[in-house]
Structures are given as structure tokens and as C-alpha cells.
Image (cartoon, rainbow, N blue to C red; front, side, top):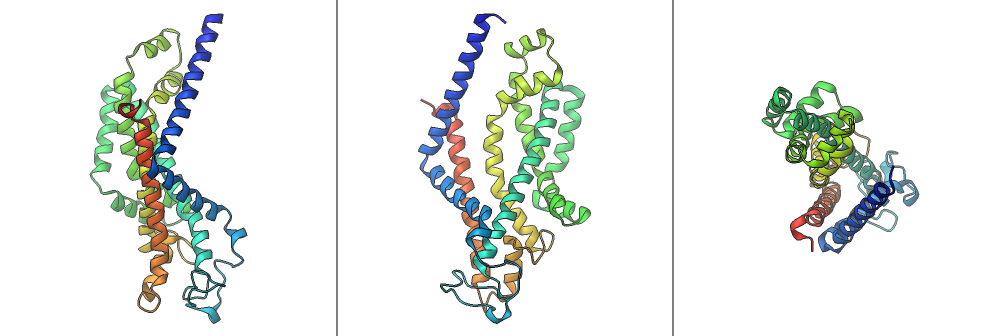
Length: 295
């Protein structure tokens, strides 16, 4: 490898690092995104350290303290079975955030693979993949998730599959559109001329240069997935009691909404906070990556 090639590679790496730092600075400078990052960081901290922050068991019954009001010993009161509500909220964040994030990542992976193949090869392959996604997108996401959850059954992995299926087409179409615009550019033709393998061309040269819109799209999809997780749990197709998942807590609390409305209000508030924080991060990330807004 010549010295000029090494210098060029180093310069490219420095430019990429500088661009990444600029994007992070622009993201943090976005007031809405900054608030969203702080709120989401608090939620993640609660989820990770729930066992340290709370002395209570999120599942163990304590009927003597059923429906206890807010107090110093129970900062958000207790539920109908005497379990500390704040403890269940913190443990529930683990399930809601994990399922929402992992199902989005699952959809992103399959969307990237199918979108890359569709956009790069075109022709019959492109037509077959896109027509299949047309069928998927003709079904509302929540209805599709319900159908898949009923067919596969309700456990962790099946729930993530059910939530991810409806989002794969969106990622695939976004990446396909990006690839169609860059697959004939000079650096791709140069990679072909140097006998690079198909998968190397796709995932080393093409996909990384098409990924920015997918990052924004994935960030914006997580809130909807968390809402869908809660919705499935609410109708009995998600995580089931006594597991402290926010949607399941809403479902069990609805029977006591007149006697103890906090059982519905509190998990609802945390779902709203999570969705708003992630939406704010997504908006900030979109603005930070928008070349029209860069100075």
C-alpha cells in the first residue's frame, strides 16, 4: 500500500470522526433532543438499577397494604395486591424499553438485508420483494402484530417478532431508495473493478453510506413499538401478569380505575414520558443529520 493511499485513508477517517462529533454536538444543541436524552437516560437508569433503588419485590403480594395511598414508604402507593407501584414501574421499564428497542433492531436488520438486496439487484428480485412488502403494508401494523402474536403465542421472542414484522417494509424501502441513488457512483464502480465480493460491496461501501435516514427512522419507530407493546399487553397478547410490564399494569389497573385511578394514571404517564422523550430525540437526530441545516 502506497504512502499516498495511507494518508488518504487517514484523512478520510479524520473527516468521518469530525463529522460524527459535529452531529453529536448538533444533537445536544437541539433543546428538545437534549431534554429527551436526559429523560430517557433517567428511565434507563431506573430500569438498570431497579433492584438497587427499591427494597421491594415487584411480584410478592402484600394484601395488608393493598391500594395504599402515596406515602414516604410507598412513593407512588401500592396496587390492588399490595405491591409497591414505583418498584413495578422501574422493573416494568426493563420490559417495555427492552422489547421496544430489540424489536426495532430486529426489524432494522431484516429491513437492511432485504432492502440492500432489492436495491442492488433490481429487476425480478426487486419486484418480488417490493410486492411482498406491499401486501404487508396493506395491513395496519397493530392488526398485523395481533395476528402474528395469536399465531405464535405470547412470549418474549414471539412478541418481538410480532412487533417487528410490520416495520421491516419501511426500513427496506428507505434503504432501497438510497441504494438506487448511489449504486452506480464512482466509488461503487471502483469497488467492483477491484474484484470486491458482492457482500463486501453492499455492506462495506453502499449500506454505510445510506444509513443516516435509517437511524432517524429507527429512533422514531421505537416509541410506536413501545405503545404497541403496551397495547398488546392491555388486550392480553403481550407480557402477562404478574410480570410488571407497563401495558400489563394498565390492563390490571383498569378494573380499579374508579376506586384507585393511580393504577392507570401512573403507568400511563411513564409511557407518555418515554414516547415523548424518544420522539424528541428522533426530531433532534433528524435535524442534526439534515444536510440542509448544516452550516
